[in-house]
Image 1 (tube, rainbow, N blue to C red):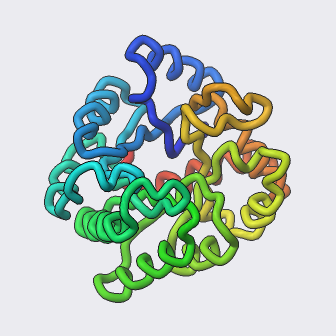
Image 2 (image 1 turned 90 degrees about the vertical axis):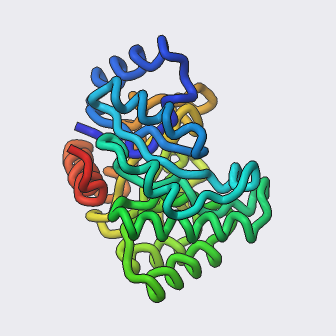
Length: 257
């Protein structure tokens, strides 16, 4: 079995979701996590997770949305996560590529999500784009000042230094369809050199469909293509990598059952 550790099922219609989950099951993807990007969306995430037993959810504010309203207080994030099907915090982090929210607002939001992750014990799903140094710096500062917390760098497409820093801090890395793109050799090299017990896979659907579906709308049934490439760079079979990434998922997302 494979787990799609990061998708956005609420971006699909109600009718489509059932069909998507059926195709995922046929492809050997038995579990998936639908990700929160706004606090106002948390109830929709919970409703999907309540409706479908193979789906869990997270709650949080994406850095691109951090400027739309006041940054939520830690207590509000913690309260939103108090639900049996919510197994993580986020996604939160920093996105300096689009810069849709002021950087200081993104950074404050990131810190509050970290503190919510620490308080709940749930892993933080981290979005990092063109902000490697600040991501690593804030993760390190928060760990030093408040204590450790579980986290996952999702859709990893950053530099080697951030990957190494994250692993040293106890973090995990999740790879998306980007890993399969012809021009992503640097990402494959980084993935190859990371400890196998820190690796997860995801789709980030409906975005970033892997080869051979690049350019099409992504969905959880495509995650085996990413897992297969991850297996190749580690020199193991697809079955071994499926088992490994699934075990890693349940170790990190320990609330999932």
